[in-house]
Image 1 (cartoon, rainbow, N blue to C red):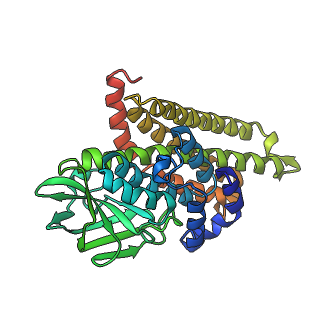
Image 2 (image 1 turned 120 degrees about the vertical axis):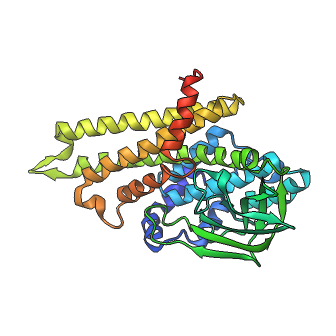
Image 3 (image 1 turned 90 degrees about the vertical axis):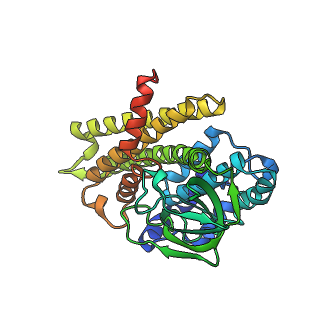
Length: 357
């Protein structure tokens, strides 16, 4: 089953997952069996050799149904990308097949109460092979078997793999604004034994975590483009059948104008994502900056189109099980994770000064 068909098969269930606070474990296993986890990893490690564009379309299909499913693919891919790029041969052979098959579910643990966008300020520390620290907002942290954790050792950043078990305390998060089905957790490490250190000390943030975040931004961008398209389709379908004084809403000029603006947002997001994918495919150094641009633009598009879709749905848009309402809430979160709007704007401003425009 391809991603579009899979997304269609679970579309009716997504509202319930959001309401009850979690993608069911059996659905997570279905995603793994379908081969959607770390699909861009080389086949020799169990992946599917997906190109950037193929990974993007996968995330757009899932994102247009349930952001939590896309988030599952994102976090697994982030950790796999870091291991593939910075792990040694033994680490790649040991961890990548487990990540691609879903035998090990991953969490990415970088954010702390005092270190959100400023990851250089993390307080988690590694000493004598034991990790201490408290990480927040770990996507699928409530189900994770292994965590990629940013910490420091002797004042230098390190990225380590820590398996769930003794010394790892998971605190599930519920009731947050969006991404309610993404099994988010806060995770405390109390002298937890470290399974692996990826790359030399000093490379943890700039290299290992940087690789993970870049992969995350790319998949979030495509997921947001899928969300924006889904919101437009839902809005167009609603106004075509909803009548006001005997006239379909779609006959009102103001409604058509809103849909036109939404179409521009969707197409722009799709093109930004496709351009970033093409640059990644050929290894162009500008891909890093264009990925930031794609994530920024697509997240804003999902938020804007989601807001318009909610308003066009009227009272139906704020129903607890409304898809457009869920997407609108999730889009607000997308403008924060993997780099907030303000952080992205600073990055893109520097890029523009260097001629990126």
